Image (cartoon, rainbow, N blue to C red; front, side, top):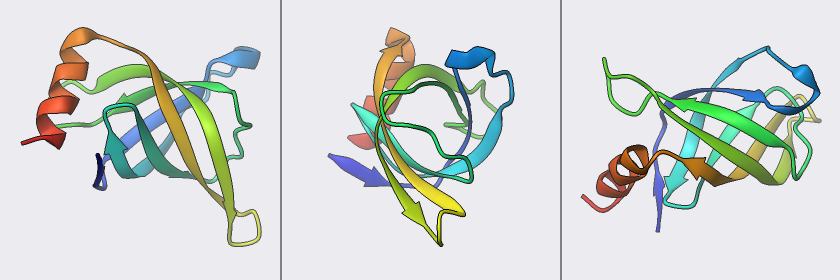
Length: 102
């Protein structure tokens, strides 16, 4: 089940020594992954570290995702990205699950 929801998130590519974080919004979230917008092209199979502001005034959820698809928007000025969650803390997983199936 995918839940359409707009949440603030930060991400950065794990490879290439990239330390620059990018802020954006989710389009939806599921137990297995997220869909979000980005002004940066991220190739399929790239790994990203995600910090998701899941609840207001709470510590962000952190997890590792792998990009599984990318769609160009607005003449490649923006991208819609689908990423599968690969590594997540058990407690963060439970929080996402309870949010989706509330």
